[in-house]
Length: 255
Image: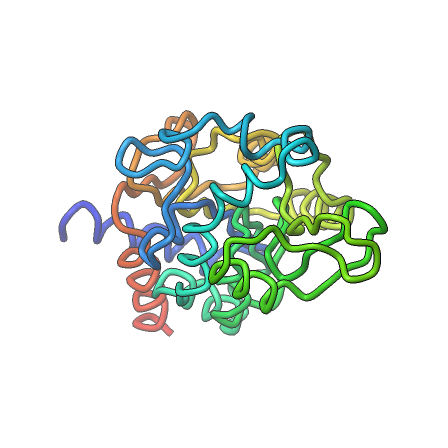
């Protein structure tokens, strides 16, 4: 048995024995679906721009066009993306009764589209947009499709205010309901599976430490090393779209 196969088997054993397993996903789970991540040396979006200039709440209010210009190719990539085997594997683990919830840093809706039911979107989502003037909420799909075509900043039909996607920008508070759900899940979990996250963005990056402090086992599946690797019970540096389905297959093999 090679090293990765042994690690997959160990992760599967931990899942089988867990009472309340939770997954934490980052951008790396969506890169196999064609969505670039934000920090890697390979294709990180922040390698190209200063995030505070295009993706902070203050900069959005002052110059929403700069945010939308930066977001336009990303919006197209997100709309074109489909759930990959890693997303589907997490949804299958939930349907098997082995995974309680997914906590995600991603805004792309791919977990829900893959079939996951209990998803905490801590950095928001592109399901809706909100007017920064009158706070009217709009479904985002048609607005983003039109924006990708014409490049025009979307505006509210009620007050002509700028519409902001319901994603969390720098300097903006995390959604309260999502945070409360995450805190409850982390208190309960006895196994946290980190998938495709660099564990560099706080406060989400602190969740493995909190879970570990509460006695939970930690599994990390990520191409690159993280600062939490040394405390994890299993670390697999490989393609999440290969590893997670392999874990599901290993579990089914021992049913």
